[in-house]
Length: 398
Ligand SMILES: *Cc1c(COP(=O)(O)O)cnc(C)c1O
Picture 1 (tube, rainbow, N blue to C red):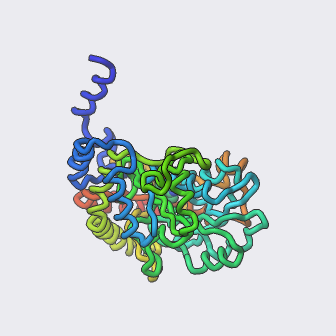
Picture 2 (cartoon, rainbow, N blue to C red):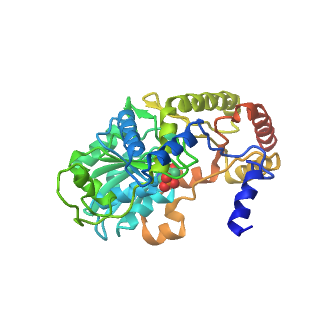
Picture 3 (tube, rainbow, N blue to C red):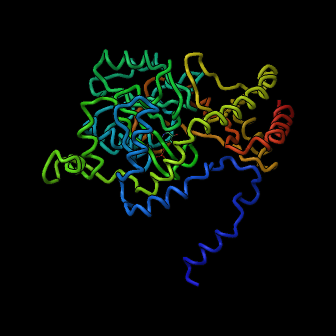
């Protein structure tokens, strides 16, 4: 047997859960149609990008978000990189963003030579504090990149107003925001551009995958070029030019049709997936209410004008010491509870490549105290056990 065959046969017999952890932090949900759609893509004979499944996903995402143009990418990271290219960022330009986010929010812009300028978050939603953005603007500021943390919207009216006042683009890192809304406006469809993620840890998945939502029509033609290796291939396929050639910067940002087929099955069930997640989220929220009253934790805050998507259930513990002890108890009981993010402004690369605007105290404190609990379709049956273990650990610590 070749080494490759050995790997394949060992996968067949392996259990789906990691040894030790009996209730994993995440378990990718399959609707049941993914493999069938991949087989249909194979039968159709079009395996590279932009085939019928990709186009169906584009239409579905446009309908879902109200964006005039959705373009599948191989990740949200790639979509953010496309956004940075579309902004024509030059070395020394600045992009305002929270420090409490995933590295891709910053990296995409740093790759163009821009400097991330980190501002603090709100203590309630853990989203960028809209009241701190204006103070971070300089003559080099080219964009504000907001992150809708846990699928709860940032204060978009105030942020769009700052952007408009200073002629600065607003980009949405909506990696966690599919099917969520701000004042009935779907996330990702509000700023000049929005980026979605279909990574297996998100609500709607394709293993790896993403999409760029191009909401500003002026950017559309160049977005297609950048995604197609800097060629006008999309125009060629529409019959708008008689040959295609290299016209601009670009790269290969599109996923294969096999990924799009998988994603199509997920998008069909996006509403049902979201409802079930919201159900689980509510169970956590109810369970945590008396614990919050007892001062043992703080629950997530969802403002009334935000429709969230139950991307995450997190709690904030009183301090780092208690968080560390709590995670150890959860691990002992076989429950996958985790924390994130190490603030970007205090990370080795963030210190070298970015700068901070003001103190980032809420970011630092949140990063020390946050715990994410398992939230995936199927975790329902384990919730009584998770609640028991977590509650006992909290009461013993408190
Ligand atoms: C997951 C995530 C990303 C990256 O998404 P990929 O599809 O893995 O590239 C970026 N930003 C935020 C806020 C995320 O949660």
